Length: 114
Image 1 (tube, rainbow, N blue to C red):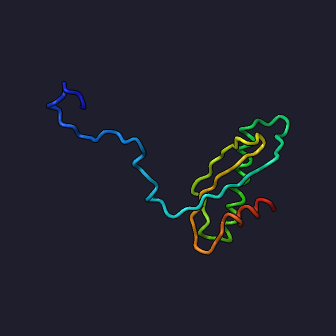
Image 2: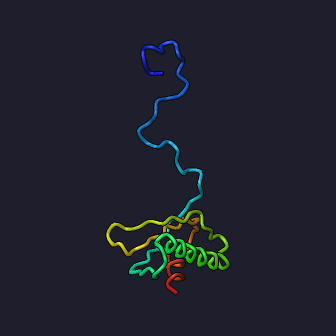
Image 3: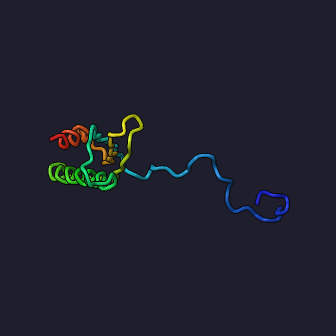
């Protein structure tokens, strides 16, 4: 649609932008809480993916238990990422709704430590 051969063609869409135009503006205020597991030893016979899935399930169970005390606590997203600095660190980024006066980060991290 941008060549001279198609001069009579009516362009329907705009050219692509060099940056994303769709944002997360429609989502409610959220908070991303990072939970780091350091110095982990993967048990013999357990693959890394299975180990990550088991840890993810533990994080979900802790948050579900906490949701009984905090009715507005919900998991909106749970993503795994690995740090580049240390191979034995696993990090889960948990997206939860932001609530005024409540620090879900410290609540979740303290519950996982217990």
